[in-house]
Image 1 (cartoon, rainbow, N blue to C red):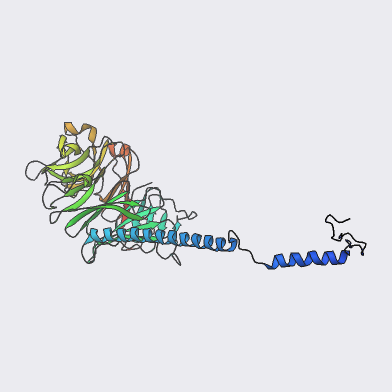
Image 2: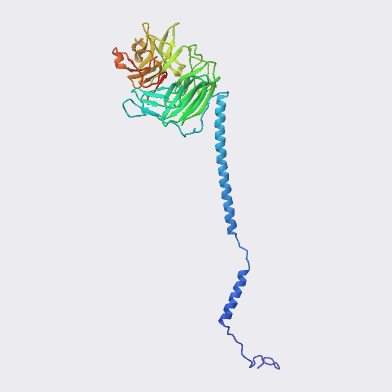
Length: 419
């Protein structure tokens, strides 16, 4: 029945509507709808690929900047070191400082031999003749490419030697000779060179200046410089100070303390030579007294080398050769008994009572090496080795020289301190 009069009702008896869809048609319709949705490109909130590329670029830039910074710092440090070393010399033909390692290819190795025994590179007290080390026991160690030496000392770690060359027309050189045969030049074309007893410091004359530097790892570091009078030369070390002789023709010395400022005028006017230090830090030297006469003296380095004790018994030579025993009691020094020049043994504990010296052997040349409180070694004028036993010398038996075996003719050996 119609809700409105006169209008036909839409519910008629026509064919019924079909609500059944075949499965294949429904599946096709769903597929078509999904394919349309996938085909539409939608913007993403973030771009993963772009993020990865930008991150890689930032990392690459940071690494590049870090590498450049390291290279710049290394360049600045190297340039500063070279500039300092250049400023230290200030003249043509000035000392050369080796910063990098030399070519290690093809270097010869040292060879050691002992007559009748197997080779051994362990001398306890040795001699250097051009390129040859010879121990007091007759052991030899050949070091290549060093040339004639004036002074040789073992490095603190026992890994080699510091070698000061003899004077040449080009000056003096300082080299490090390592146990594996590597030779490094630390100084070339220098004036007089002196080494600290422990081989950790070196002082030298360069033009109108004096310089002092530390020796570390085969290099010179921390160089200090001061202007010096014409003719002034370093003669030794007293702790971290350098003992300087302003005029080799006159008596007198100065202690230069690099951390305290420039070289000052000489206060001491009496000292002629120094033989070494005592365990308490005082020095033993030779001072001038009456014209033509000298005496032994114990000197205080903290009071401008003021003599605190003197002894005028021995008749001393003025060549400056001498050495003090490790316990500070005995002094070997050149002098005369009567008219005969000899090496003299002096008891420093009796210095104030003008002790008489006893003959210890023929006159000494070069370094004097004490191995302990009662044994020493030195070379005579012929280059022969003289071994001193204090007990025997005091008993009236001076030491006799013995030839150094297997040293080539013409080579002049140089005594090396034991390690």
